[in-house]
Amino acid sequence: MTTIGINGAAGRMGRRLVALASEDSQLHVGAAMECAGHSLLGQDAGTLAGVQPLHVSLTDTIPSGVEVLIDFTVPAATRLALAKCVQSHVALVIGTTGLTSDDHRAIDEAAKTIAVLQAANMSLGVNLLIALAAKVAKQLGDDYDIEIVEGHHRFKKDAPSGTAMALASAICKATDKDPVKALVHGRHGDDVTRKRGEIGMHALRLGDEVGRHTVSYATLGEELQLCHAASTRDVFARGALKAAKWLAGKPAGRYDMPDVLGLR
Image: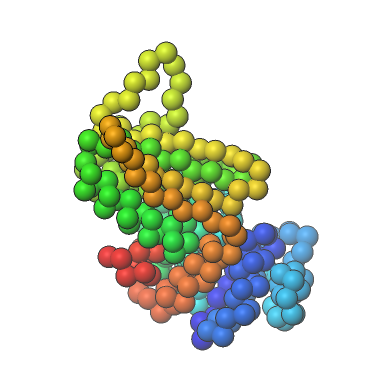
């Protein structure tokens, strides 16, 4: 059995992680964390999640015995969690998006001490989509135009989504492109004629859309689409829990979902 902690356990995703983990016989919720001064500190994590009491109180520290901490929060909270995990020698699963280049460098440094698994999207289906998108782009080449469209709920702060950027990064790597030069974020103007080899990126923010990503490949006469749509956030939570079980006991280093799925 793997003992996990949930950072941001009072949040929407945190509560689902607690609830789903409590149903998994291979997992034990050993910690539920929130920021110092949070109004719900001391409350039972299970009760907050809408399941039976787990006798695990919301705290702002990592108690002993936790093997892996799961973080689905915001960049500022992830930074604090990363420092706490390094200090406590606890592995970390990061699902937070919107991180800066400095954050990624800090994660690289932390990975010299602890095992860190970071993914823009924890869905198993999305990670298969990323792998397929890269293979299709490499096979079709620049004779086919590529456009990426992502859609999320109206409250999402960052754009494009981390998943859309992961798709673009995988495609660029497979086709030897520089993402900075190849990506075109939306189009506006009197002359935006498509250039050969460019990759269009578009973000939609609609109501309560959980997450939808479509990669289109088109040439004169035909079009191919790869699409993934999530109907519940539970797919991300279940993926993160699977990642935590996989990461437990791993040596220090950087990991991601393709490692969990054996796509390397």
